[in-house]
Length: 163
Length: 163
DNA sequence: CTGAATTTGCAACATTATAACATTCGCAGA
DNA sequence: TCTGCGAATGTTATAATGTTGCAAATTCAG
Image (cartoon, rainbow over all chains, first blue to last red):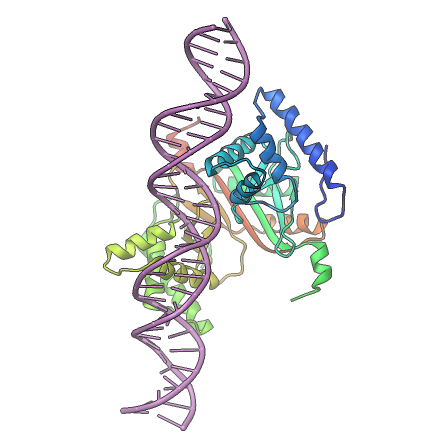
């Protein structure tokens, strides 16, 4: 269940999605949480690509499927999914992305390509460790970490060598 | 010019502010940038506390001083100040805070207390290093980093030992 | 089947941010 | 001093993102 998604490489994305959906069902069952139709559909939409998706994009997608929903529907579903670690919010983009490590305890670090828009979630012990140590030197009790790195992914570096 | 602000400790905040304003003037002069009245006033307002301030809070403050401004005025001033590293945007709060290390090359790490709202900017080499190394393992060329840690500052831990 | 709790629908609204265009200001050169 | 150009600001409107509050529907245990 680790080292799964490599958004910057070609891969069988359908498998990506079905894996994520299976994980989600398992995790919800395990917690006695209800993965209702709407919630499941929202998760699926989020997973349709590795690009973070805005809440209103999800809304539009739902609408295009005939499910006329209002913003609260989407935000509630997203809240639920975040609560169970199935999606993450990318604060710098006001957008949401499927969690590649659902069920694992982790502090996500995101590598966001400003060119193609794909985002890779990474879990790196050395990073979390350094962050918590730095916080400790200030006697700060850290509870949650947002770490979002913007730059160029390998593919896009190749296409535009520099600038 | 280092190890200046300790927002979680009592300190001479007026000195904090005048130091920041002096730095700002120096940096702008050095770059041939114009620190106009509006921009200077916005910076001063941002620095009035160590709590990140929303753009509309700044706007309200300006209004209360008789300077009737519209949102673009504030956002433009903030853009300018960000450009010269005089303020940072806290993505997780949609808010802005004065930069404690203006003029130094740095990757800010913010420790944000969810109780008192104060935010401390920290520059830690080991953290930046770990982040860039992690990005490198994915052949990702990082350009900018957002690192925001939420938790409890020392003062607030003392007041509410746990929860 | 019934009742309580969860989930959803819906309308209105709040907050944050930007677009487009007119006007003014500051300053360098004639 | 005047003139003109680019930078900065004013102004209005609007876009994008997110929330509140309440009513209706659904789910599920007993």
